[in-house]
Image (cartoon, rainbow, N blue to C red):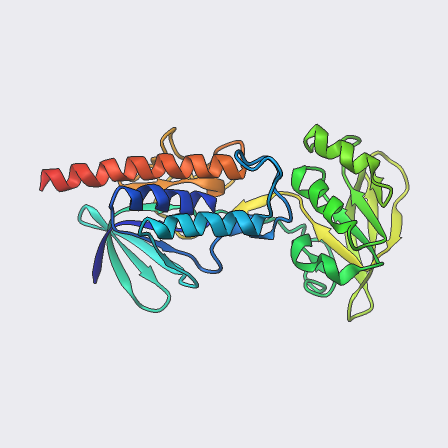
Amino acid sequence: MRSIDIAIIGAGPAGLTAALYAARARASTIVFEQGVPGGQIITTDWIENYPGFPEGLSGQQLGDLMLAQAEAFGAEIASFTPVVSIRGHDLDFVVATDDGDEYLARAVIVATGAVPKKLGVPGEAEYTGRGVSWCATCDGALYKGKTVAVVGGGDAAVEEALFLTKFASQVHLVHRRDELRATKCIQERCFENERITIQWNRVLSSIEGDGAKVTGARLAATNGQPDEHLDLDGVFIFVGVDPMNDIARDLIDLDDNGYIKIDHDGRTSWPGLYAAGDVTDSDLKQVITAAAKGASAAFEALRYVDEKVCSI
């Protein structure tokens, strides 16, 4: 069994920043990522509110820069290596991966992030990948000259609706209330875009298709108005996220929504086990806050490891 100082689970902004800080402090550090490093940001078309990049940059570019910086300081990135369990071992942790390998870590940082929520409406599961998507950056180009709907009213939904106007001839933004939750500057761009039609006070009640692909959707009103049917080629859903807490669910305290409870410095209820990013109960879930929480968690994990070494 290989021994390391710090194991980081998840290679999004929180995990990569934690890796940067840990490796820069000369702690032996491995980041385990079940897919491609970068996290949710690599599916984001454009990021314009990350400090230091006044002109903005793509999510893929920012993810690549974070990855390269962590590796430059000596962090090891284990891509496509899902962690299947964490268990306590004396005062350390055993981290097991799906290929049967195990690592003995003095401290662990959980930065597994969150995944888009599903609505659970009829047709959603049936037409996933055949007109139903949670990633406009991934699938937007498939809808050139077509009509799509975006469900949601927050930053992610409105930004993705704006992105889809690069391809689709018409974008219906479906929102359950009579005002958007997105940041004002993003709302302004939305209202100015002639390709976006906002369906106020509506919820998606079902997705319809011909057996092969999406052909439309039914919208139910939240204000007593009649239901409405839309002819559509695609439906993009952005109604929030669910924390990826499976790896830690039975080890540490979670809040009522399944997010990992942490203190200001990223400590969980188990000493030596830290968490950062969108999997935690922090209110603001942005790239910059994920990175900041990753730095805090790494700093505390380093201090914890140093104290353990000194006590031996």
